[in-house]
Length: 423
Image 1 (cartoon, rainbow, N blue to C red):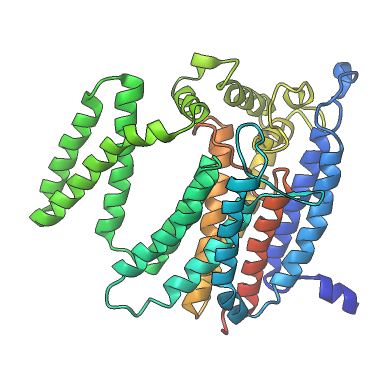
Image 2: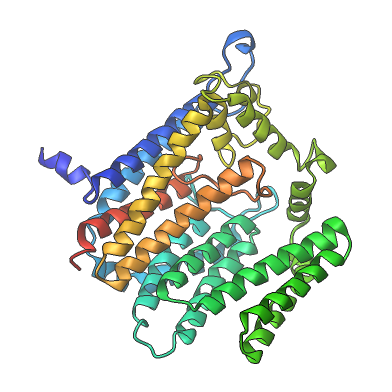
């Protein structure tokens, strides 16, 4: 009985149940992916070995132990470990660029014996903890601009290092975490609105230059922006600043585009026109939508997905595992899966609202931002709403590093739910 209590993480039981259900969901889907197709296609050999399921099962056990340990660590120790952890992962990211072997044109993994670890995954939890520490200690500052700019620098260091691997999807995770936490920290509505408008300017400029190949969409956007600024009756300096930020964001797109890898450029262009390369960069997105669409309301039934079984769906055990759920479990199963993630995010926001210490509140928001961005982007990619960026579905996709890091995030939430209210 005492051993069972030691192995059972502390904290919110609903959150723990959702975590356990998601891990079981992952194991069930990976078992299906590694099983040969049934029915008339039973003789076809699968190209995803059963070892994938076995390794994920081992990582699931390790992750459960990690959750148990993290859920019991005093919060003050987390704050004390924030800087050493951050500097440590930054050093590992530099090591990846210098000594990691190149696999499929990128350097992302460090070999530790027979294990391959992905430091960029561990950098996510290090950044969340450090930002919570940094921002919570600056809430009383008269001006929050220096703290905001400082936090952005802390985020850009690992983001740029990861982008050099190259791994665009993971580098964007750091910015998503920062945006969620800086919003909780307190950012003026003008700054937030300017940031969103600048993103819109960049997207419209890209469409104008690369897709429409005409300047008028971006020009119309700027005219509408000027009209909106006039109607809002902002001060002249504020209006000029907003306009300059939007112009800079739009004109910066060609520069950013030139720094992307050719395969990243092709993925983005294929998103706007999947038919431009149906058997190349557009193949994954097309087959993913076919798999999800064939599932219907209740799916083709477990183990009987043909897109998965006949290997039409690439990366079905990693980035496109949601497509397997959509095909075999249908809309009903996909909604259940997304509902479990929603429960995790809602519990994180509840913890952030109820926590007494700013550190605990900011930490919970950072974790909520991590799960929200990962799930929204991954599902949007598999359903064709976003270009393919190679971002896993947390706790579900195959991969020991991501499973362990996502579990550490859940362990931190459990810790906050058990101690954050009183700390």
